Amino acid sequence: MESMILRFGVHRTEFVAAPGALGDFGIRLASRVDGRRVVLVTDDTVGAHYGEQMCATLRSAGFHTAEHSIKPGEASKSLETAKTLYEFLARNAVGRDAVLVALGGGVVGDLTGFVAATWMRGVDFAICATTVESAVDASIGGKTAVNLPEGKNLVGAFHPPVLVAVDPTCFATLPQRDVRAGLAESIKHAVISSPEFLDWHEAHADRILAQDPSAISELIARNVRIKGDIVSRDPHETTGERMVLNFGHTVGHAVESACDFDLRHGECVSMGMLAAARVSEMMGLTNGATVDRLERVLTKFGLPVGLNRNVAADRVISYIRRDKKVRSGSLQFVLLEAIGRTTIRSDVPDAVLREAFETLLP
Ligand SMILES: NC(=O)c1ccc[n+]([C@@H]2O[C@H](COP(=O)([O-])OP(=O)(O)OC[C@H]3O[C@@H](n4cnc5c(N)ncnc54)[C@H](O)[C@@H]3O)[C@@H](O)[C@H]2O)c1
Ligand SMILES: [Zn+2]
Image (cartoon, rainbow, N blue to C red; front, side, top):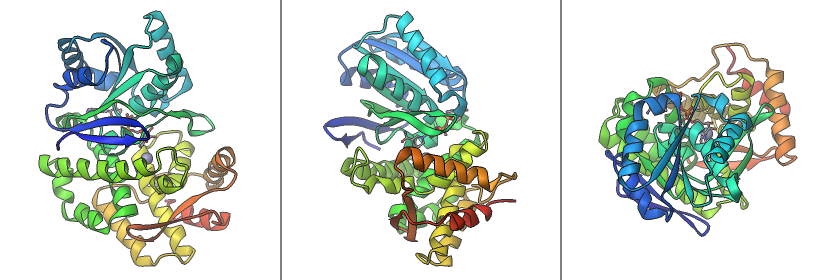
């Protein structure tokens, strides 16, 4: 894939996905920013695999680097971890001309972006995305956030990166569970926008899961186009257009919180999409064939279509309610009319929501 420019209001993000993009990261970044100081943020796992290579490319492009590593996992997307990063920046006298570089998945990207948005009222940041989740979704669209015990992504900011680079050869070390989880977001993009793209997933499932380079390259390019397009039309989620990207996330986020972040985000989105499709069917918006089709594709990609543990429906419903109260007062639910066609409704009865969630229970 050639490099692409993603628009976010007046902001421009360079997005590149290609083997070798990690090695070229320094030189690309140097052409996007004026300063020559980088704080590299990664997690312990990704840092052990790719930290050295990232430092080398940054240094050879003339950057001075300092490195801060966090514990891997969703629990690190917290205000506590943000605080340790702020303290690191303060100790190292990091000023406004510095760039924060996130090397890792969506957790490192969301946290680093949030800290970059708030450090001295905003410094530049860039992402080297090492997970499928981040390459097809998290690194696109300018949203950054940390979680609170009360819910996911409750504290955040819009702060698009100057550069996103994906080197798909890094996926070789990614556990298969994480590869599959990331693919849930790609399936989401297909379900909300393109029956043909969903057919493509089904037809090429084996090649995608085997990480065939041309299949992965096409997968990333198509996701960037779909999400980049939606975001460019509604960067700050004000017109409602961007809301369709939350398909599967109402129930998904609640399940993620109710399971104490023990499941992957993409796994919760998989179950959340199925629950949303079932809500759509119960409300007479779509037919059983749409639900069956979605379930078939998710299963083909080894994604969960049900929980492997008992989770109290009350707990999930209360997360959804809390989220709704905190966010807007009325729950805007993204529902399906057909593959590629969504509708937003705020009149989903709690009883329907509960029944749909309960279909996920073992
Ligand atoms: N900002 C957004 O618009 C947006 C969109 C979608 C998802 N997200 C967020 O992204 C997060 C999930 O992202 P994720 O799935 O990338 O999680 P993650 O960053 O926790 O990565 C998953 C695991 O893979 C490991 N890992 C990462 N790259 C690796 C590699 N190349 N080799 C070996 N191990 C590797 C990590 O250490 C971690 O243990 C969630 O918090 C979600 O809310 C944000
Ligand atoms: Zn998501």
